[in-house]
Length: 68
Image (cartoon, rainbow, N blue to C red; front, side, top):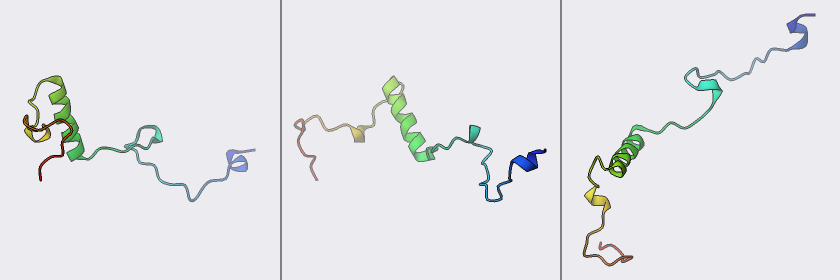
């Protein structure tokens, strides 16, 4: 008895991407998302100042709608 007697080859088996470890599938962030996350981590660590566009003006009421 040989392996060919026990197993039948699959002709329609999908190809495997060798860059993926162990065949795991995961989403890789694009460059823009990675840059944004890195910038936020630098702000959280105190290495970089806050982005002034993401901070509301000091004269706004808390919970108020932003001006158009």
